[in-house]
Image 1: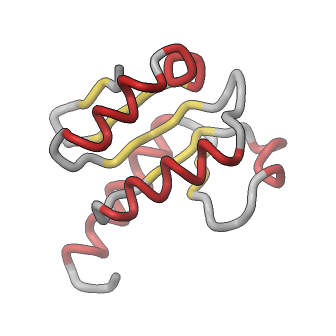
Image 2: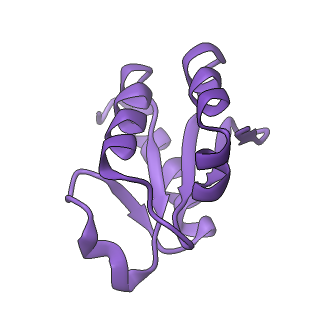
Amino acid sequence: MILIDKNDIGTVSTDQFIKQKMSCLKQLNFELSFDLILDCTKALLPIEDLIELQSLLKKKSRLLVLILPHDEIDILPIEFNIAPTLVEANDFISFERMQRDLGFQ
C-alpha cells in the first residue's frame, strides 16, 4: 500500500510496490490524486512498470519522483524525475507544485 501524507504525497519502496503491485495500482487508479515518490535505493523496478506508473500519474497531472543514488542516475532515460534523497524528492514536488499553481506548466 502507498502511504499518503498530509501534503498529498505518496511514498512507497520498490520492495513494497513489487509485493503489493495490484493494490498499489488500484490505489493509484481510484483514490484522489496525489504525487508519488518511489524509493528505488535498494532495487529498481523494470522500465515497463516505471513507464506505467508515470503514465498513470501524468493522466492525473501528478508527478512521479524516483529516489535513486547519484551513481545510478544515468541508468534511466532523462524523462524521469530523479532525486537522491527523500528530502530532495519532497522539495522537487513542492517546487513543481508552485510552478503549476503559478501557471508555468
